Length: 484
Ligand code: ADP
Ligand code: GLC
Image (tube, rainbow, N blue to C red; front, side):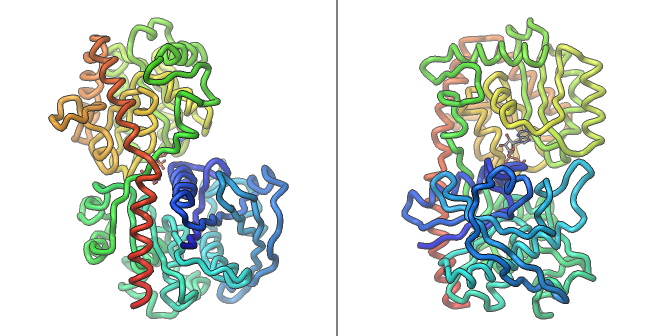
């Protein structure tokens, strides 16, 4: 089966969050199942700079943007993790640094950039005479492709759309709707129209032949008014076409046994390296050396309301008071960063805030911390808690979305205990869960047992398992396409 994965992120080539890891984890796993997989991502400025050896396959393919045309060049990045990876290039759209924005904030023309990206996909398939059986789109940046397929482009290709986050609608201002190239019937409430606006995400949700989201619990949640971001009605309507497939972990990147970013390696049978990683992290971040005997919690996250940053900000004084050290690596909203810098000044030696995107430090925190804190308001899947399990770092999470599917409380009776969970989106609930973790840590034998169970539980979260379920969705999408 020929599968074209279209994504705005692909790790490590272009990554802002879990979308990059998910696309890069799924592609080789599908290839291993016998699919002929290709990946297309935008040729962002930094990618072209980092990979100057990429080769042009076709150039100047015309892409209509309503009243004007733009031209797309297709470059071959050469196989990445064994999968052919292509860059869709246009200087005015992508010839700048940043995936969605830069230090001045989000780019104002993101809707046009990703409309261009989406529209260039059928144009480039046609120019290269490549006809995939399935196009696998990811989030709002590629939603339009599903409507274009429905409108009759590429009649032999089915569309499968992954919802990584229903909270990002991908709005197009009304004056720009002509760039979409869709007939008026697509711009109604049954199509892209969403409370008077036009949403590119909704194009994916309404017109893909099959829908996938990234955990079973999130698949249920997005069908509720509380978590459906206004799209729960559509999700209920399409519930027969929607599957929740848990993301996996790419163990070639995230494994303490052979992680090139760590000062020492370790595995379940030989844990000495984890203590060395903790010592090195305390030194690197100038944290109080007495924390070697006390639990250190880490967090690696985008600073957005989804991630429960306000809970951490409000709970931090009590967390520090309880004797827990805390390290937070993150970037995003300036207001959160300001509050976190204030706390870092108030609690030097106990709390460190690193305002950055730093892949290597993310790995060192994953290994060096005792606890990984993920107090999200909502979490479609969440990858960091699964990485933490693999690194023997105990997750303390709010039981929502994929966090609820992957972390089981020490008090749960299902025999799968591997962490601590809490329900209320409240700083007190986070503090109490961390207090339970701290108390558990004081019995080092019990803690070591829990660490062993956590590391063992990570084995379940493989991309191979996810890829087999994707394949079943592709087959159903191809069937559905025949009758559409
Ligand atoms: P989301 O995609 O919503 O951000 P996930 O848990 O699925 O959440 O994935 C987050 C990914 O991004 C992980 O690989 C994590 O390590 C990485 N990440 C997030 N913030 C940073 C950061 N500031 N520096 C380095 N890596 C980060
Ligand atoms: C999104 C979600 C996150 C998920 C990731 C990869 O960014 O916020 O929960 O893990 O996509 O699917």
